[in-house]
Length: 148
Image 1 (cartoon, rainbow, N blue to C red):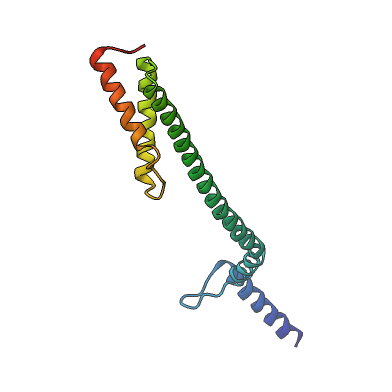
Image 2 (cartoon, one colour):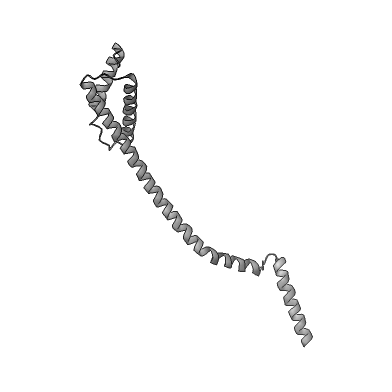
């Protein structure tokens, strides 16, 4: 009887040991694959939750950065409009300006117009006449070489 039990254990040992190396086709028996997959799932549960939390925070940050960029662009447009209005007032008072100053304000006008085209809800009617005054003053200065 002992001999039979020893033989049974030997067969079980050989089958178990063989299952580690050999997989029977088409029935795949590999207890180590099953065990390692389970351990991997258990180890990655916390990681998956953390990755999801990090991704949610990243999306939130992207939204905030987008809002900040939009606010920065609007501030730049508002500053350009202020410079345009001030320069127009100076032109109306017949103050002379250098060609470089005109060029700088013309760049502000281009930037401001581009912003207004990209943002149709932005109120632009405050600056339209000022731009027209500056363009007329620039044409006059070009025609008569009347720069400072």
